[in-house]
Length: 165
Image 1: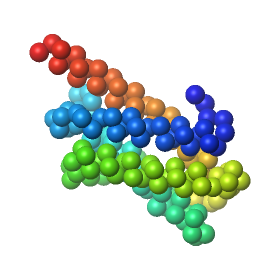
Image 2: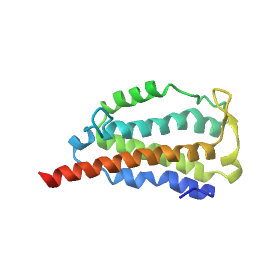
Image 3: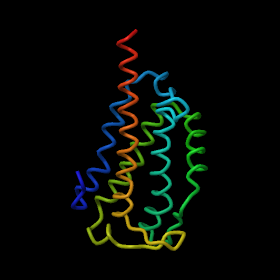
């Protein structure tokens, strides 16, 4: 569903929360298994999602709320993702889920508290490029969908292995 109104956009961004929460029953070994050979584990992927939310919350959303210049900027994705994988090694799946839900709820709660004008207001990010909360949320929806599809495909293979054994 393409988000049309700001309310729909926020709801769509928030819709990943119950899906991620629904994964809390998975065994620890599943969380640490690569989604495909040579790829991230489920926990790595969740930490990747959470850390992007955390980054933009701290570098953009808080700055907007406090009337300060934004510090968010274009990051080296490979470096950011490597940090997410290292971070995933330090937390349990339960902690990763809790942190993802926390940041996603903070972001959606804040966005929902704003007027349409405030959501669409454009600021300059740390690179001097335009940033708006609406465009940010809208821009990350395909990212969420891409990773959700990866998770769903992985879980089908895990289920197939369970039924074969």
